Amino acid sequence: NAGVTQTPEFQVLKTGQSMTLQCAQDMNHEYMSWYRQDPGMGLRLIHYSVGAGITDQGEVPNGYNVSRSTTEDFPLRLLSAAPSQTSVYFCASSSWNTIYFGEGSWLTVV
Amino acid sequence: LAKTTQPISMDSYEGQEVNITCSHNNIATNDYITWYQQFPSQGPRFIIQGYKTKVTNEVASLFIPADRKSSTLSLPRVSLSDTAVYYCLVGSGSGNTGKLIFGQGTTLQVKP
Image 1 (tube, rainbow over the protein chains, first blue to last red):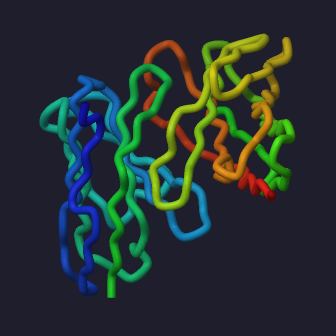
Image 2: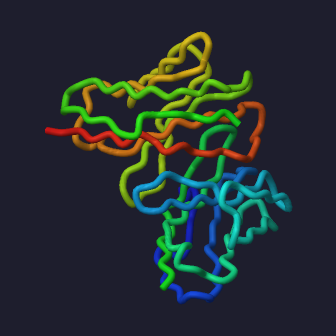
């Protein structure tokens, strides 16, 4: 009963480094998305996908890339990490209108 | 996209009923209303969903007036463990539109 699985849970990056946050879901959902949540703030949509091979930008896409080669996986790539990208990142998948979230990936950029 | 507006914060005491109202004036015909709860350091989780009138489950009730321009989440007899952020989300029911955008949410603080 995994649901949405994110890795890593915690990561510290140096400014300028790149990395990929992994996300996988086992519910066969077509829709997946990435959100970031800064301390004390709400969720902001980064990128989303409505199916394999289809991605689109959300509210705050700059500095991030995504791809969707399979229904199950939706990785988020930070191209050149900046301190402003320090945040908690949540991956989600959706069945119709119900969103299921992962446990989050805490990213610190120093 | 139907934008949502909620109070930023609310306080309550244990045992009281809490009602959180969300405004969504531009809701579309196909949109459903869904509420999520988020505890610190966790991802949001589904609470309740409705289209019109009233929906009740073991956790909460959702009241939606006929014009659907607002909705009210009702939490009966709250406890300290109900302290969390509550989000109202409006999205299409006729297949995923893709862009599910959260508002700021309502921080509920339950006091002993």
